[in-house]
Length: 363
Image (cartoon, rainbow, N blue to C red; front, side, top):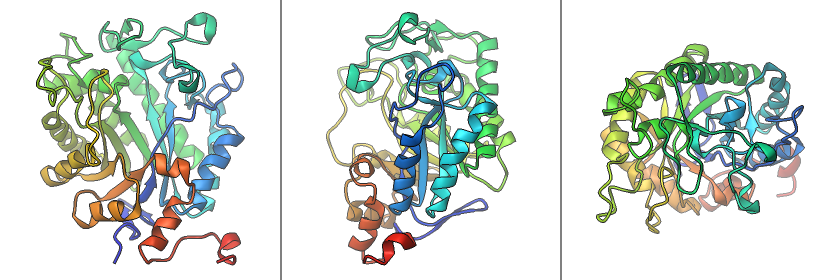
C-alpha cells in the first residue's frame, strides 16, 4: 500500500496526499512600479497545472514580505493590500483543482537585488531596478555587495512585514503559510555564523542567532488561524562542517535540530528540510544528500518533517515515507518537468490518480 497518497492532517487541515509541489522561484512577475510583486497569468497557469496534476499541496514560490525582500525585481511580493486580489486568483485556482494552496513568505536579505538566473543573475544597482540589500551583518555573499547591517528598528519592521504578509495571504485564501529561513536568505543569514557577526541580542550564541526566526514565527502564528498550519523551511546544514578542509564556524545539523524543536514549541507544524545557501561550498552528489538530514530530524525531534531534494521517482518518494524518514515529500524539478508528476506517480504505485473530471473521461 502506498503512503505517498494517503492524506495527512495538520491541525484542522487535511491535505489529500503527501506529494507536494516545492516552492520554486520563476522570476516571472512584472517589475514595473504598478505591477511589481503581483502574480500574472503565467503564475495562474503554472500553479493550477500542478494542482490539476495531482499534487496534494502547491506552495507558491518565495514571496517577498517587503519590496527589498525580493530576490529579484521579477519576484512575487505581498507587501500591500492592493496585491491581495491577484494572489486570491491563484489560490482559488489551486483549490479548485483539488489541492491545498500554500505560500512561502520570504525576505532575501543580503542575496537580494539580483537579475534572472538565465540572464546571468548579476547583482543589480539602482539604475537597473535594484536596491541596497540588507543583512544581519555587513558580510557579503560571495560575489555580491556588502549588505547594510540591520538596526533593531529594521529587524522589528521585518517581523511586522512577515505578519502583515501572512495576514494578506490568509485573506487571499491560502491555507498553509511557510516561513523561508533557508538558502542564505535573511532569516538564515541571522542563523548562520558565516553571515552573522552581531554582538547584540540577535547574534552570538544559538539562542541569539535564532531569536529573529522565533520572533517571526510568533508574529505569523498570531495572525494565522489556530486550525491552519505554519511551516518553516530551513537549511539543515551550511555544508561547511562536512568539509574537513573548512574550519569556519557555520550552521550545522545539530543547531537545526534544536531550532526545529524551538520552532515546534512556538507553533510550527512542519519543518521543510532543505540545505545550503550561505556560501559557495562543495555539496555532495549523493541521491540522499539532503533527505538523510530530514530523516535525522524525524528521528531526533517531535516536529513533523517534509523531505526535499533529488526526489526523482514515485518509489523513492514513497519509500521515504514508508521508512519513517519524512511525513511528506516536496518535489521540485520533477514537477517543473512534468506538471502531472503526482498523478503519474499514483499510477506507478498502483493507486487512483486525482484526475479532475474534465480529464478523467479520457482514461
